[in-house]
Length: 155
Image (cartoon, rainbow, N blue to C red):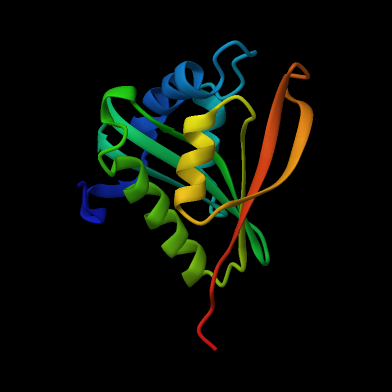
């Protein structure tokens, strides 16, 4: 298993890797929107965290989460195929969830392709619940599912 200690904040040196991974693992078959400039803006945005595992030029996984008043939105998330099911993705997700808790977030929302059974299972294993299916969510052609996780607060 990969420990949380290997998760770090992304730097601009990671933007090209993140963009390419998004193109290959998230946006396949769709218009490529998460290009270098958009990823670089997200990395620099103080209301967004981009967490990665691996070194620049050799990332294994990443997650990008935005924060609002009470909700966080996992905008983009990917793990290289060869590094799935060994804890890399879990480490990134748990790191982002810990930041969300610290920020006082009550709920995290994320979307996945309806046909992506592996992603839906991954999120379910981490306490996310499917709340809605949306036709043509991605690129007006691919159906998606909206998921959410309510974070427990210490009362």
